[in-house]
Length: 189
Image (cartoon, rainbow, N blue to C red; front, side):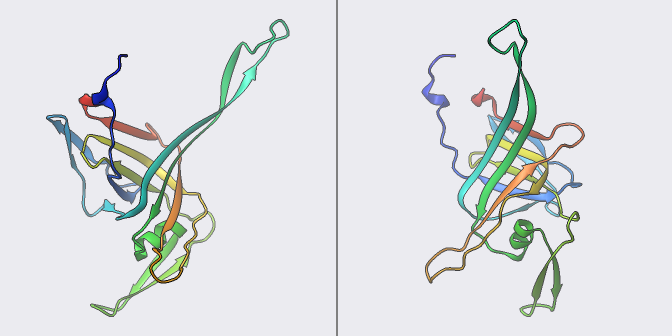
């Protein structure tokens, strides 16, 4: 690979979408190195503003395979794999609180008199979701097909002028087929 300044990118935060795990995955098409995607607006929704974008992390734990005849390991074996998606929600909607704290929503009322009651779900009944990130230039997308909010969710309600955010960390779980996929326009290859 040679040095290519055209392949040094600044993508910006892009957009984050969520859907139930059983929702149909979006379909992508590409024209002139830009994605267009077809999603069901009833299944997929934007989570809104974030505090500082999104981070996808991928880690592997390994162990050494050793033998008496060698001083160094003869190979490494993977013992664990973990992938996470982390972001801090800056839009503190009922849906975002429910997603972050794994709460159920009960809504009552109509018009401007709607009240949302958010209640904890029973242990073991927590919801999994699909998460998708699409770059601001529509040239890179990432989809995780089954995620569980496993991080510590905490929200600070501070003095006036301080933004309230909801930090979340989703762990990607195993599904049949791919657990996650990256989609890149050809000019990123």
